[in-house]
Length: 162
Image (tube, rainbow, N blue to C red; front, side, top):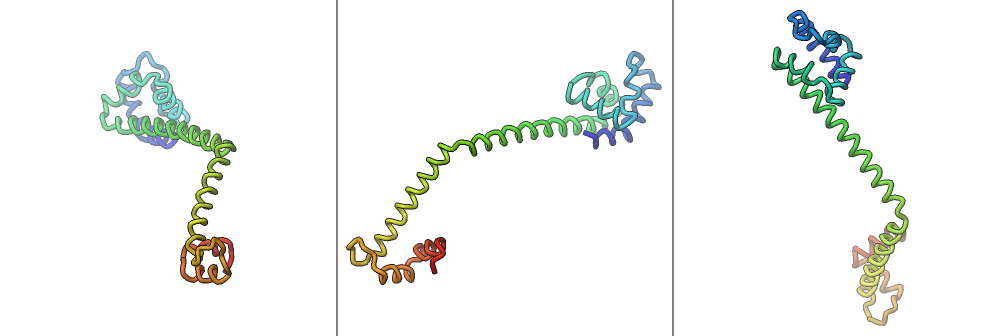
């Protein structure tokens, strides 16, 4: 918002001064200084964009007199809207991530499912290694499997067995 406040001080404030001289805001004491400093600009943008107060009283006359200033007002509005939306989304995502990490039961079940899948995979691989079908693996069958089956070699590497 401060970036837009700086832009407003440099660009919009001279236009506001012209409108004050033209008598646009005879009943608004703050309008003349609304963009006179970065602090005043920040307060004005907060008032008009966040609180939604005095948008018509301040921004509309400036835009009517200088239509191109609508870009500044609209961009400041969008910046604030997306900034607040992003902040809200970050809070929600962080909350869900924290809840998930604390879900010990769910994590345990997930680990059990993964372990069961790994056991099935190992069982199928050991069946392929058992060349004589006696459900016992000999050293020769293991060594032969390490040479022939890339999946078994990968498992051995994971277990730091060369």
